[in-house]
Image (cartoon, rainbow over all chains, first blue to last red; front, top):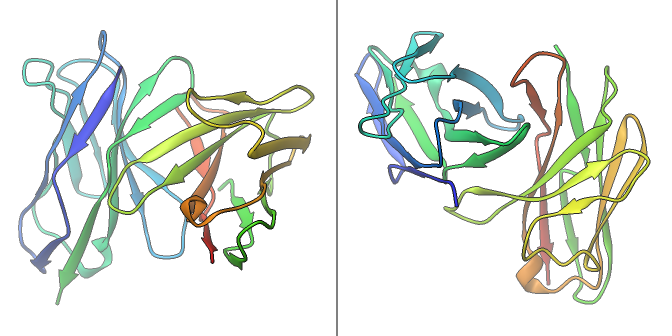
Amino acid sequence: GNSVTQMEGPVTLSEEAFLTINCTYTATGYPSLFWYVQYPGEGLQLLLKATKADDKGSNKGFEATYRKETTSFHLEKGSVQVSDSAVYFCALKEGAQKLVFGQGTRLTINP
Amino acid sequence: GAVVSQHPSRVICKSGTSVKIECRSLDFQATTMFWYRQFPKKSLMLMATSNEGSKATYEQGVEKDKFLINHASLTLSTLTVTSAHPEDSSFYICSAPGVGKDTQYFGPGTRLTVL
């Protein structure tokens, strides 16, 4: 079946550092891919998405490119802020509405 | 924006008792809601799809008699963990699809601890 694998966390960085969180997937066909973010005490929120190969999703300075050759959707940000501290989930869409998630990566940014 | 709430946020219960978790869409209607379970350091696993006015659809391996789902109205779905055991301790999250394509709104989750 379809699956998503994220890099193990937790990840701790200093403010203004470059961020990469790796995500690879196994799927039949070319599903839509997502990054969700969960801030403390809140529900998951969609951060960005890409619906086809070579698409780049972007939001709030974060980017991820749908790479079918490497079946990857790595999340990047050039300069992180303390407010980016959260748990990040990579996911793919299976069927009409079902989401398959990675295990989540906890990110902590120190001032 | 649209909000999904869950109640309670944390619950501790004794082994053998039943626990009900509520999921509400606060400013929109949801004919479908999803229930997920998250194990420590593992991904969110979809347990079931809750359908207003009809039976829930359970994922393979999920015991429907243990995890009872009732979609009572267009804004409320409940998950009841029956005869809870310590292995049922987990973080339970619900979500509801929004109007836009690929839009889903998630609740903040419920931490269940079974002693």
